[in-house]
Every structure is written in C-alpha cells, then in structure tokens.
Amino acid sequence: MRKQIAAANWKMNLTLQEGEQLLEDIISLPHQLSENQEAVFAVPAPYLMMAQQKLRGKENFSVAAQNCYSKKNGAYTGEISVDILGSIDVHYVVLGHSERREYFNESNAFLAEKINICLLNNITPIFCCGEPLAIREAGTQNEYVAKQLQESLYHLNADQLLKIVIAYEPIWAIGTGKTASSAQAQEMHAAIREQLASKYGKETADCISILYGGSVKSSNAAEIFAQPDVDGGLVGGASLVANEFVAIINALKK
Image (cartoon, rainbow, N blue to C red; front, top):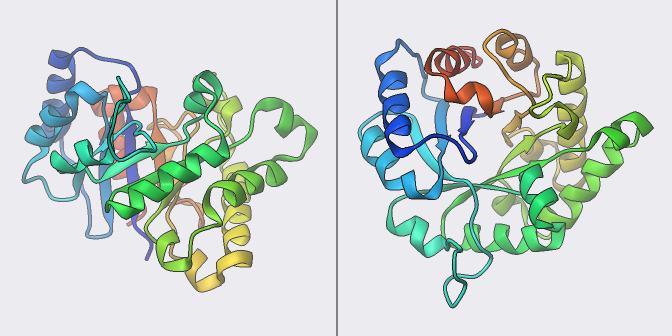
C-alpha cells in the first residue's frame, strides 16, 4: 500500500512560541498512525530545529522545509541549501507550491533543478502541481498539470521518481473556502497517475503517493482521502489548529 501522508504547511504563520505550543498540543491529542502513514510538518525555516526537537522520538512524525535553493552552497544570501537541511536531519522539502510559482516566478525548469539536488542529497521532494481557476474553467486542467509533470519530473528515471511525493493543489481551492469535490479530486489524481504510468509504467505509478492540497478540513478529509488515488493531504489553514489537524491525521486510509 502506498504511504498515506498528512502534511501540514504552516506557510508564513505562527510565532516560535505559538509553533511550539501547536506541536505540543498535537502530540498530546489522541492520534493513530499505522506503519504506512506519516504526519509531516512543513514549518518556517527558523523553526526547523525546534520542530525536530519537539518531534524527536515520535514514530511516523517528520519535519519538512517549505523550500530550498537549486544550488548546493554558495553566495546566495537568504536561501536554504540541501546541505543545511541535511545537517539538521530534515529529509522532506515542499517544492513548487503555487505561491512560490506565483509570487516568486518559479518555473518548471527551475523546479527540475531543485528536484535534482534534493534527490542527490537524499531529501524527499513534495512536488506541488495544479491549475488556476481560468484553466479549470477552460477544461484544460489535465494538459496543464501534465506539462508541469513533464517539465519538472520526466527527466528522472523510475527509481528516482519513486523517491518523490506529489501534491495536487487546485489553485482555485486554496484559501478561498472552495474545495474540489471528492470526485474532482479523484479524477485529477487518477489523471496524474495515468500520466506517470504512460511514462514510467503502471507498477511505478501505483507506488507514488499523491496528496490533495486544497482547503482540506476535518469535515471533508475522510471523504477525500477515501478516494482510491488520493493518498492524504497537504494542509494549510487547518494545520494551524491542533484539533483540526489531528482529525485530519486520523482520517488517513487505514
């Protein structure tokens, strides 16, 4: 069975003290994670070591960076390298989030460079893809997402692809209160898996975890996660509330 993941994306939220309290609250609440399930916390960069310390010894709990740079080291003021992440034992990084693409003009080609350096340094990318509202309304979302996959991932071989987690985020459903229906989520997740199968074969595609990232809440998580091609969620606002996020963790497929 594919790994089921509840990934919290704190974005640019919470003070250090608030982040510490949130993790303590989450840890203290009843939660169930089986062997093939994981809770991942993508926290602001200054909180990475704090989160590592808070979660140390917690089985199936991991910490992720929200971004990294495409170079291993050098004179790139303000950026975070894979060397830095590895030195503090962080082995997940979110790449290509729609906000990085929109506000910082990250291209598919630039993301391919980031993917490469992560894989060379044993860091698992959570690669985000997804369409804006205009593309969804035009009915060309499958082609749009396929291009993102092709230009950022298709230079990899099958063994490398197996080290990646994909997060599908319908941009029109992020922070808007809109949510893709469970049927819409399944439809796109299946389309992504079919795209991967056409390039790498069904056996490889069936092993890739694909998360849904679009206004996941405790009230809709179980229905969305129950879809056959949905392997968990990349969660924004709801991950900032302990009760909400624990309920989302507990909604993962058993």
